[in-house]
Length: 335
Image (tube, rainbow, N blue to C red):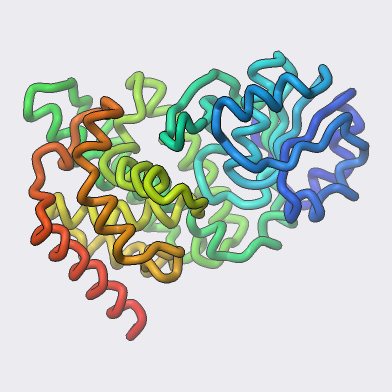
């Protein structure tokens, strides 16, 4: 399913038959002269709203294959089109900033709220080192945050189990923790976006996805940190690099959990991850509004039980969380 190597995308579409491309302008310009053919249609992704995706799909010609080129939104759009049409799906990630490249579900928005639908794993994933290394390093490093979310998600999952709300699987949890250890062991490779770092992240994506499939839900890797990010996107209607707002959520929720937040901040700093608000286009009031409405958001969207459901999110508590965030951000700048 996954192929790794240098220049492996060259001429790839010559063996696909007719094909449609889902992409954005920057990644398309990087690869269009290398893939070896002309698509029936090149779709430039603008939104992940489900209604808009469905309107788009109905305008597209039938094809043998759909090729997703770029990051999360491009690949998810390609998944959606291939899922609905029954076409073969080939993905060419130009950055590895999220686990979307190996998942089978599509992250759509319904009135700005994230929901996962569909079942379309890629038939082929081409991890071309020559393409991925061309992207800014911080975009590729951001992919680590979709593995680091295991840190806060496991706490939430176990908390729900302790409250008698759902089953906790010790075996799967231990395997998920092993993913965190492997990430830490390869922190320098991931920071430097070496071939080893790229392959490590891809293999970790595959492992955490497999753990979620075995358990039957995303509990091993998705919890309060993702719910924070979803609410932030919903309130602001802004487009963010997925990993960065997950990283912000990981730090804030680890503080809310009182769950070794200094340790997790240190690892994010070691990898070179961006979670400082001003570096990821998030302002103070947006963070505070997101925290203040978080209980309402998870209740209305019927999200699984996490620390959010029983934590103090009063104005004083939110101010304290923000102080911890600014303290760690300033320490990182000093270092």
